[in-house]
Length: 148
Image (cartoon, rainbow, N blue to C red):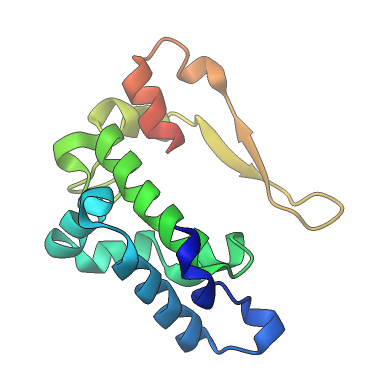
């Protein structure tokens, strides 16, 4: 995987546009062997719109400091993990109403107030409160879904 140095340029250093960065991520994704990105390929075939919304390359690029190769690998890992966690429902949206990848137990726990936002801290950062008591007795798989 180290052979992809040509697409690892950082967006900010080289003044690349978002479109160029996205294209570089696409190029990196193409270089990953199909067997290593099976869940990603399945998601692209079954729910391409969901792939765009759940794994927007720009969000992943920012997290990876605009390293296109790491971004591609992280996107592939996301879909592998999502398929492991949600199984046959992996390619449904993570929604609280309607058809969802989340189990009914997970949705009930979220509605019960497991997590909610508090006012931002003094630095303007978001603050979330998690009430672990709501999920402590739930099956491990349901807790994993909730935290996904």
